[in-house]
Image (tube, rainbow, N blue to C red; front, side, top):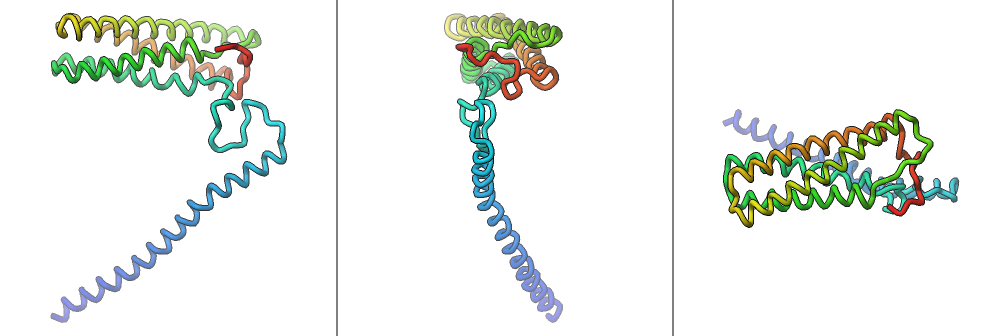
Length: 218
């Protein structure tokens, strides 16, 4: 009986100690969370006072607006990359699990991936100036080549997927054809993304708008 009482007393004591420590910890976290935005705004205000004439590619905000970016391409291009890769994986899975619902998911994912690739490659595609190096120009040519292939292949995959889903009632051979075309589109979008990362992080193109034509319409 004494042993049970001792265990009970120690349990109550430990709960009180841990609860007190947790209260301090939560209070500390709450203070740090609430003070972080205030510190950020104070930092922004001080930077704006020091640098009142900030250019379009330099912002003192912690969350930049669309107009602060020299190009919207980096904000858009990641969506088709993910969507096309997911569409290929789902299409490959659908060959093993022949379900109409899964075919609908592939169709919608592929459609948004194609639209995203078209928008990123045609309408918000940045144009480099003539000041880039010869090597960077070669990388840029390959980047645009694989980006263009991505649009064409994803468009072809979408066309055949529509035919297969609505007209041929998901014939196996058409579904296999769509999977192979999507495989090519996935390889091209991955290669284009690799070249894009090389242009930014190795060649230095696009960082704070460097080597980009800022007055281009798209």
